[in-house]
Image 1 (cartoon, rainbow, N blue to C red):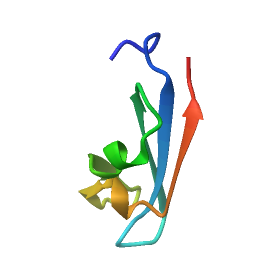
Image 2 (image 1 turned 60 degrees about the vertical axis):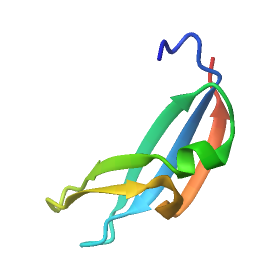
Image 3 (image 1 turned 180 degrees about the vertical axis):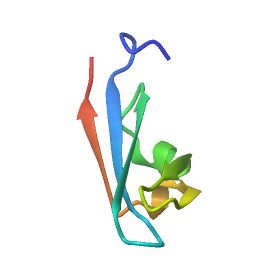
Length: 68
C-alpha cells in the first residue's frame, strides 16, 4: 500500500510468551476499523530468540492513529 494513500496506522502491543518482553507491530490501512486488524496475523520476533505469529486480537493494547 502506498503510504500516501493510507489514512490510519494501527499500532499493536503484544507480550512475548517466553520472557514477557513487549513486542510491537503496526499495520497501515484505509480505515480505523479495529476488527479488520484484529483478525490479521502478525509475525513477531523477540530479543530472547522467540519467534511466532499472533492474531491482532491477542494484542495487549491496540490503538489507531490518523496517518496521512
